[in-house]
Length: 314
Image (cartoon, rainbow, N blue to C red; front, side, top):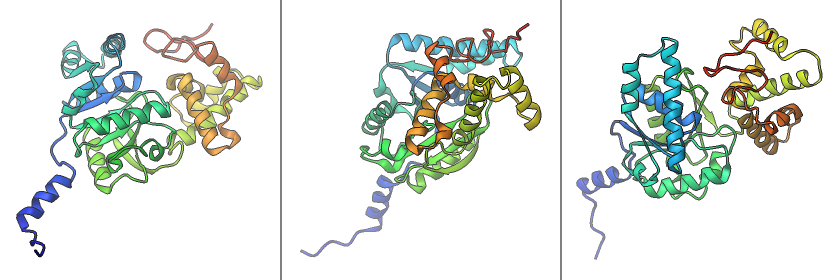
């Protein structure tokens, strides 16, 4: 028998099944409740969105909630938030250890540690769990999203989002297009990120993207200057702040990023690009070995109080 002609109704139904969903994003799933995950959850909740955070066990879930409450309490102490606002934000955030719950969300982001195998495993799992019209974003600073997404069955819906820390206060988001990312995925993601108050820039995949690639050599060089005894940490940061109108110097910036994360970024960049400007300074390696990770633990290149404020040395 000859092929039956396709009716307009059948064509419309087929397009509906294959086109990305245009429904409003109201419930966002985050895999990972670390510093970045908590910052994203607060940012999204502040825009009236419901948030689901997936953590790997009950202990990590407890630490995630405690971390968010502590961050909000610091904001309250600075008069940047009220108790009522804190309660409202937390009421829209749920933490779970069951990754299958992510299937009920409208947009998904993984925000786990910068480890290739871990991120790839999570993306593959999310691809199987989430409906085919749900966009899956990866928050990576230096890794190849194209390589991470290679085993995913539907790579066109995978996209990269690189937020700067602290997320609630930093208005930038780099949207990273992997080679497989579809135009529709990019369009919908950009509209969503702009709707939560962030300025977006489009980046084609390359190690370090824009912000990480530019900042690493400067921070690394500041560490070499300190290690070589050219100037003190205080004077290095003072010089850079005043000369280039920076809100904080490169060493305090490194402390804010987290020195162990910064080391991971540098090692990844050096491995991918091979240029010496990305080779981590030995002083950074020593700080990480000593577990002086920066503001999150109270000491890095400088010392900090519980609210993250610099402690001035006498």
